[in-house]
Image 1 (spheres, helix red, strand yellow):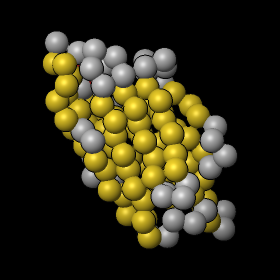
Image 2 (spheres, rainbow, N blue to C red; image 1 turned 90 degrees about the vertical axis):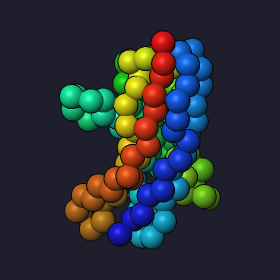
Image 3 (cartoon, rainbow, N blue to C red; image 1 turned 180 degrees about the horizontal axis):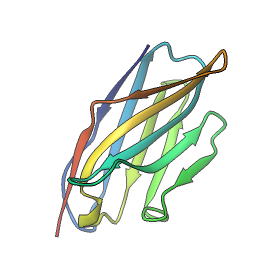
Amino acid sequence: QVQLVESGGGLVQAGGSLRLSCAASGSINRINKMGWYRQAPGKQRELVATITSDGSTNYADSVKGRFTISRDNAKNTVYLQMNSLKPEDTAVYYCNVYRVVFGLDYDYWGQGTQVTVSS
């Protein structure tokens, strides 16, 4: 099992910045990918950004150029730096860890942290 603890959400004005953190503990070996997803009210959960164990990143088009994902492998922590925030970025943000162990896929999710961007 993997436990994920998120922090850093909050209320910010449009144009502001926030930094989310997610620390992983437990069975943290063989983590292939870490990432952030978000879910706005009435919408499906969507990918925000992911980062692999070798540092390759992937971003949703809506956040490219504004958000930066990074990872501290020594601390088993993933970060999401969010700049130039917009009201449409308002959502619950979830940390995700993806592992492949002996050919089986495992997905783990954090409890979510609320990000609210006021106009």
